[in-house]
Length: 310
Image (cartoon, rainbow, N blue to C red):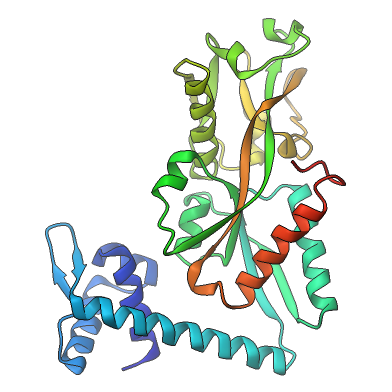
């Protein structure tokens, strides 16, 4: 049995779907089926039962999953120790909705880790086709810093994902100068009951719309949304706000120049916010990634007054 067989077994045990597991692993479905069948033959037990929806772990499969996860964790810890022993940097790839103020905290944490003797290198990655959570679960990144809606948190598999709260990033309501709301001294979510809201439909902004919709429901109305595609914040200058409203985070406002757009006004609604969290896969909690995530969270707490984090 190869170590990669254990990784394939764990991925299938997580997803309970051969097609999705094979896609995440970068192998064909038939190859994954053959590898699982070979493992079952070697172990002398059935690990999965086929179902109409995909697969289910057998009692033996659940027992083997515990041991497989333990072996993978031990291997990862040993690999990290050896890399530190040899002075080789530990690479951490971060994803999600990382604004400049968040990036400054990540960079400060990296410097602190290096000062403590840990050779660590962090890079950022983003995807136009996957949500930040999908990037984390698929192994594209080691951790994500993003916001989750209440529904996402309720449906999150906490056995796979460990999410830690960082801070609340207030709503910013952006309108053009010609919009009647622009003449007000302040604007909050309750004032948007009759206004079309821009619904950014790409996966990059998936969680953000969920949080906006929940805030509207709490204010007593169903949001009247107007779909618009923006692969990332770089597309914001192309948005048409002539008859609609855009809600973004306060942290994002400093990063987006809105160049090419007509004059606009931005109102901060302190009563509503995007709860920003840092999340890792639970399999990495005992290693360098989990330690780094904990230290990022600690740094945010220490800098909450200096940077305006809530």
